[in-house]
Image (cartoon, rainbow, N blue to C red):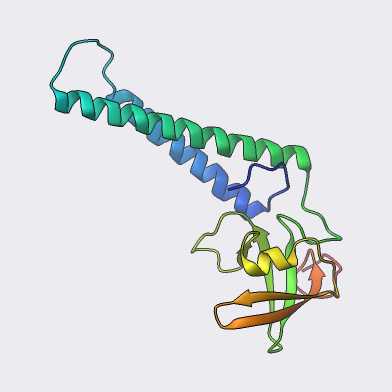
Length: 162
């Protein structure tokens, strides 16, 4: 995940907020298992304690990353409406004539089939593009193209009314 202070969409924000809450809950649980004594124990006890301390450090690091990302999104404001960026909702028409409305995000979720990550081939091709532009990108089947129909709504007329 990037920590650039760019905007994020509502779904990505909710996912990050859920992750942050889960991380904090997990961190509290791990912290409660750490002993607050300097009593000597067996090597197995010491190894287990070291493993929990390492896990606590990992959780603290991820909590910091997610917090910084959310704060950066707050400072950057809403997603752009004139050019495809992080958090943009984009309607694209693929080479086969099908049309789809997707959100450019940074966290892939199986529960959100309309989310395209910014570091995916299609996401990278769309970033910085405007309505009417054609993009090329690589798929497992080979090169493909798509046209940016509109930004900001799902009906393709660009009025922002979905």
